Length: 270
Image (tube, rainbow, N blue to C red; front, side, top):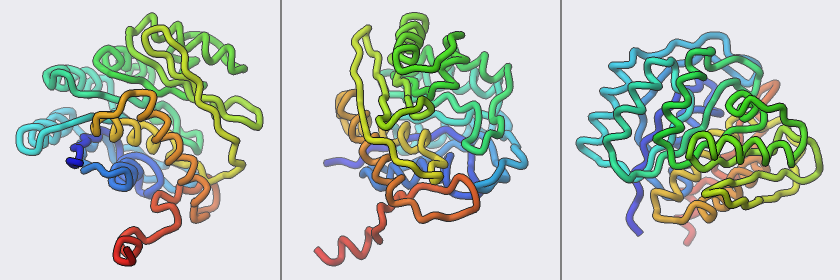
């Protein structure tokens, strides 16, 4: 199988749990080659995001252009975008790629509660959704994007259907913020509803779950998998990574992307 080239457009997490760092680990573990266009540098740990420094839009575009020109791209993952100007410019650039799958994770707030997108940037998300193949909001993000209050799985699904109809883009509505012993994520694509269920893992080590899931889906799509299969595989990997979390930090710790193994040594034993 050829190695898919996954372009990740997102911010850097100095704690290594989310953002570009989680994306690279995920794509590597799932068999892809991770390439990056960094949109912002953050000073953060498991407790808080203390500072965010967006990169100039021209620098973000330069990273994209050079990667596309030389290496090529099989799929794109968009995470933290940095600014409204960058969102619009990135959408314009990616539109030129043609039929390349694009997974957009509309990052607004970090697991710690720190705000990662201002109102203008969130408003510009519409432009990114228009060129995306899939958008992956959690319940609080879906409330903002749909203008609906969400407290139940039924309300999550109704909001996802409304957003898909409004944007014309398939939606994976993540149900982790809704209580219950079972986590139910809902994929709305072409008006059809597909549910994915998993037993809830009670853990504080969930920093980077959204990034991991979206990157995993992008990698699957880049490998030629159909959307439901790519979603299911990425979900399974994300839950396994939560179970393998090393327990670092004093608050919302990172996932265990290597799944408790040293991959090189595992290969050497074969």
